[in-house]
Image (cartoon, rainbow, N blue to C red; front, top):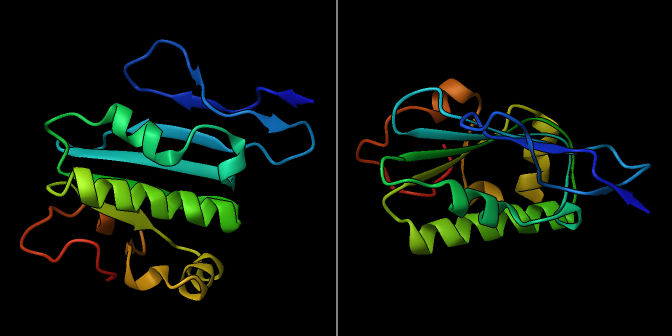
Length: 150
């Protein structure tokens, strides 16, 4: 049995939208969109992050992109667990962004050393532009090579 227990909060919406469904025993993931500065879109993920929970991260990201977005940040600072399907979903989102939205910088906030170790083990630390905090991830994308780890 699944129960809708996580929400997708869109700052432009009056009410949260249902995004993911999880089993009643799983840690509920929570995804929230924000725009802390002009030209930046931040997707904050908390709880357990995996692909079996619902629509892919890339579907969510692509559906929310507008022409004024120059930096897209996936903030994993509050993620409790990132399993293989979650890593695959993150990789797929990066690949879609790199292929279809090359002008948008795609960055990932990874503050936890344990989470960074998981990305290193998967080889994603050299593919994704990982930043230690949100402030670093929100830096303007001036003359940098896209997709490289910092």
